[in-house]
Image 1 (tube, rainbow, N blue to C red):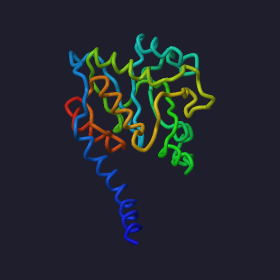
Image 2 (image 1 turned 60 degrees about the vertical axis):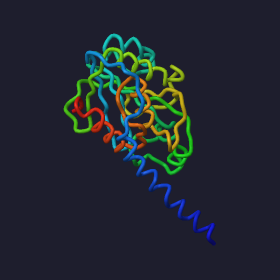
Image 3 (image 1 turned 90 degrees about the vertical axis):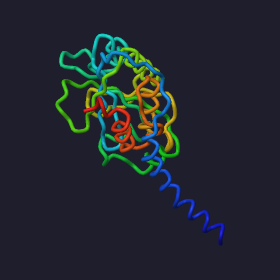
Length: 222
C-alpha cells in the first residue's frame, strides 16, 4: 500500500517538477561562447503557441547556404521573398500540425516519448509588426555560427514526401531526437547558445522561451 502511494505521489509530482523547471531554468544563463562584436545582422524569432521559428534575412549569403530549398519548392529567390523560416521539431507532431485540429493523440505521444526530428523551411515576404515577433541583433561571428548550427541540423537536403502547410514550405530530415526533455524550444535554446547568443539553461515550453528572452536579451528584443 505504501509503495503504491509513493508511486502515485511521484507520478503526480513529475508534471509539477517539469512545470517548475520550465519556469526556473530559463532564468539561469546557459553556457555560451563569447562571439560578441558590432551588431551588424538582424534575425527574427516568431513565436507560436507552442513553437518558435528562426527567421533569417534572405541575403545572397543565406540564399546560397540554403539553395537546396529552392529546388525543393521553397521560393527563396522570389522577388518578394525577404525572410527564410527555419523550424526544428518532431516528425510525427510537426508534420501533422497544420492546425491544432490536425493534432492526434498518437502524434503527441510519439513526440513526448521520442521521435525523429524534421526541419521545416519556408519563405516570407516583408513582415508587418507582430506581437509574437522579436528581432535579435547579432555580431557577424554570432550570425555565421547560427547559420552553421542551423544548416548542420538538416540531415539530408532531400525533401520529405509531405505537402507542407503553406504551399511554399518543405520538410527535410533533421538531426537529433525529439522528446519531452528535448523539445523544439530546447533545441532553439541549444542552437542560440551554440552561436554565442545568451539564453536560458533549459527552455522546454513556449513560455520558457519568452522568459529567457525577457531575462537575457531584454535590451535588444522587440
